[in-house]
Image 1 (spheres, one colour):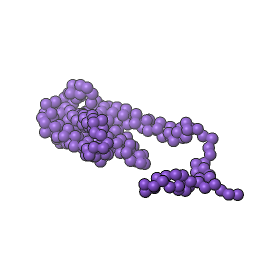
Image 2 (cartoon, helix red, strand yellow; image 1 turned 180 degrees about the horizontal axis):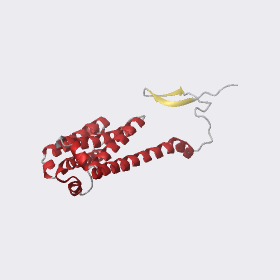
Image 3 (cartoon, rainbow, N blue to C red; image 1 turned 90 degrees about the vertical axis):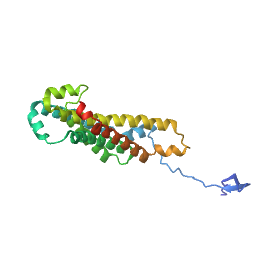
Image 4 (tube, rainbow, N blue to C red; image 1 turned 180 degrees about the vertical axis):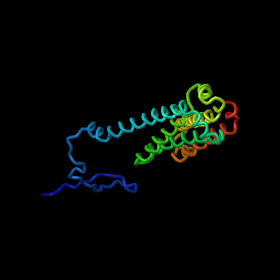
Length: 223
C-alpha cells in the first residue's frame, strides 16, 4: 500500500519549495469522556480552598478576640510586660507583622508550590490580629486605648500606627503598581518596572518610607 506523501508548500530562503511535514497518525492526547468543566473542577481543589478560607477567617477572628480579651482583663500584666519597650519598637513590631503577612500572600500568588507561603500568610495574619487586639485597633483607637491603658496608652497607639502605616503602604503600592501596568506599554524599556522583582523593590521602598514617617515624623508623640 502506497502512502501519500505529507507535504506542504512553504517559502524557504526566499524560494517556494515543497517540504515534508510530520504526521501524527495517533492522537497524543488520550481520549477522555471528561468535559472541560469536569477537568477544571478537578483542578480547582475545593477542599483545599475551603480549608484556606477557614484558616484565614480563624486567623482574623480568634487572635484579635484573644488579644482584646487580654487587654481588657489583664491590663496591668500587659503594661508591665511592655513597660521597658520604646514606642518606636512597638510600632516596628506592628509594621513587621503586616509586611510579613503581605509578603506571604504575594509569594503564594507568585511562587509554586504556594502552600508554604500560605502558611506564612496565615501565621503573619494571626500575629498581626493578635497585636491589633492587644492595642484595641479600631477607627477610634486613641479613645479605646486611653480607656483601657490610661496614661500608658502610648505603646498601644504606637502598635496601631505601625499597623496602619504598613496597611497604607500596601494601598499606595497597589495604586502605583496598577498605574504602571496601565500606563507602561509592553514594548517600552520601562516595562521592567512591572516585573515581579521590581515590584517587590517598589513595595519595600514604600513600606520603608511609611515606617520612617511613623518613627521620625512625630506621630508617636502626637497620638
